[in-house]
Length: 111
Image (cartoon, one colour):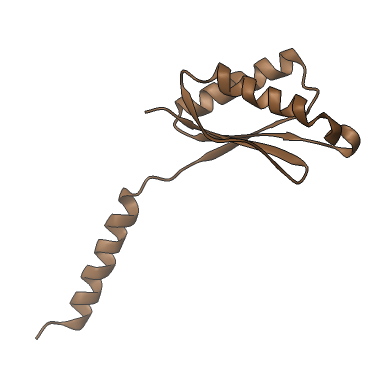
């Protein structure tokens, strides 16, 4: 026979330890437009580098407003250029994919 309240206490304690040991994944977002300038791109590239070095994942997306959806290839080129510029510190988890008015790409830091 065991003390049921003691058993419940030990179970809660184990659950707390397991929860404390799990790593929380942080996802940072970068928003681009299809006609993003060179200076703006470099500014956001530096932010992405800092996020990846801190251990966060980066969700980069190009948001198409109105008729700018006609420039899908510009958005894809922009995201692929970002992946190429960050290839030393990041790996691509998801290639650029169009979802509604957004073209999304996921980057994760290399170990």
